[in-house]
Each structure stands twice: as C-alpha cells, then as structure tokens.
Length: 204
Image (spheres, rainbow, N blue to C red):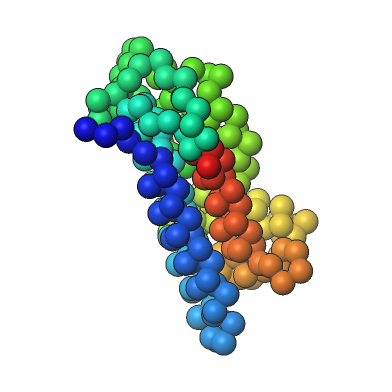
C-alpha cells in the first residue's frame, strides 16, 4: 500500500477555496440581502473545509505521510490507518482517554497531537500562529449556525475587534461583506488567510 500523500489534501483544499473565492467575486449584481446570504453560506463551507483538512492532514502525518517540502514529521508513534490515528490521539498515553477530538481551536488541535507527535514538530508552531484566525472564523461560523447567547457574545467581540466598538444591526453576512483593505472584504480575507494556513500546515 502506498504511503499517504498530503498533496491530495492541499490540491483539493486549494481548488475548493478558490472556487469559493470566485463565487464571492461574482455576487455584486445580486440584491444585498442575497449577497449576505451567499456570504454566510460560503463562510460555513470554508470553515468546514478548513476543519476537515486539518483533521485529514493530522491523521495522515501519523500514518507516515511526509510534508510537501519532503521533511518528515517527528512522530512519536505510527498509525496503521486514519481510524487508528484518531484512536491513538484519543488513547495513547492518556488516562483517562479523550472522549472526543476537536479540530476548530488551536489548543484542541495541539492537544490532539500532544502524545503522538513531538512538540518540536513544525505543525505545532503553525497552528499556534493561526490561532487567532481559527477563533475569528469559528465565532462567525457558530453565530451563523446557532444564533444562541454564547455565539452572540463571541460574535459581538468580533464586531468590536473589526469596528473598534459595537455597531448596531451588524449580522454575520454584513460583517463578512464589510471592507477590510481597499476593495477586499472580510470574507475574502478569511478565504485567503485560510489558504495560507493550510499551505503552511502541509509545508507546500
């Protein structure tokens, strides 16, 4: 059986990410209500894409995949399959075992790998460096999906971060379509920044 290859994950992530970027660039002719709806759908899609890619990459690393710059991950133990890799993350060296693996927060990702990958492996530094991006994207995604008191509090923190204070009437869609630098909007920033993150994650 051939060794797992991270290039598949990077190529597919890059392809889907750029498709979403192209979609956002083509909605200006729509009514603003529809633009906001599309922006929210794209946000959910890109966050799901990031989460799934992180999960797949971490499992493949434990199964013997090399990074795309041909360096080898500093594995402490090797898995036979992705399923075995997730089992090792939950159980290896843990008392009690982890009940679940989270992939949307920097701390959770690092904790998942803590007993299976040496702490000096570059994936840890990459995840730390992009902790803020993951948090901001998660706050928007969660408020789109849940709209509960907890998601609202976090979303309000993001509004204050973006605007410098609370701004009445801001929805996830309007925040995502707000200008960041020049013609670029926040959602385009998230798409571009997540592409940089995953590229560094696999060392492409």
